[in-house]
Length: 179
Length: 130
Image (cartoon, rainbow over all chains, first blue to last red; front, top):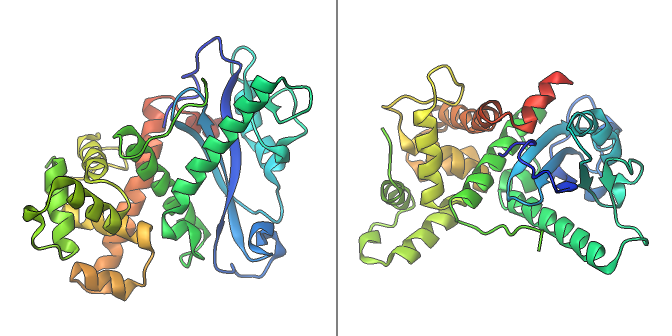
């Protein structure tokens, strides 16, 4: 719950981006668009999250989207790409290998990085996965959701609020990726 | 009305059936609260006070006479995602009575994210432009 404008001018890498799938009960009518490869083809919804790298703040939530229809990169191109492009200066996000294809806006692991940059990216992505895991501590996001896709969006955002307040009040630590 | 961390600790532990909570040390009580609701009482207090302090026209605003038990009901729902009757039994109410409160507070919680977005020109607010 920070702002995208909360970045220091000197920082190029400002955001880590990743998608996370949450299982749901099969929506009607049946469609393979809800099928998630992470759950063996069972239905799920996908959310795109963005976390500031130099502050423990969630700044982007996009979803629910259909994991069988749009992959991470397609979801990124829907909204976050335009939002990042609108920011002044050169700002990049760090993503995993699923985000290869937008080198101007998302940096992924590659063989040309120095050892320090590689370690930095690894740290950033690991930190993001850590946040995803904290969301999945809430059973409504890791058990098949029974109350429909729209309500899942509300539940997901409510869990984001709970986790971010937990970080802000010091209930749980969430380290910064910059050394 | 605004509630302190200890108020939420007391309410939550009583709901969980910890009747002798006053005789235990604070860290153990906080741990028990976290086992019940997934977050610390300080987090609950912070969210509650932000919702009370929100402007009346905000979606996340709650009145001064709101009941914190209903808020904890929504948090428990998100944390454990039990069957309705199990959740209702824990809170000593009927599923039919509990359901609207649970939905209301989940909706208020997610509205808090939107409020923060508007207050701080959060990236989420850019969503509306695209």
